Length: 128
Image: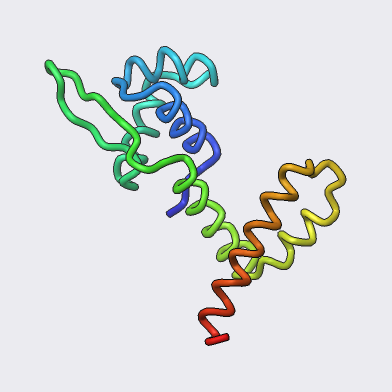
């Protein structure tokens, strides 16, 4: 599933703001990002086709809401990036992180926990 940067921001807007109509999304998200009503409507329709937004009619107005959590969507975006752009290898991503001098201690602790979890899962998969 491919989700563009602006679509991801729109999904985050739904996460933060809750269900809304196309008009409400255009009035808030659209104005904030200099995007018109028609463009917002098209993005919402694409996200609905990707099954990331659902809609229901309430009093004659279509109300849209997010389906996936922000974390689930981001995992999908990263997976797509790693598979498409990096050929499935995480090594370039790890090298990128190693070159960053601005990684906070909190982020490093989080990353160590993720690597530890992955190590355990790999060992289990390999029967160790």
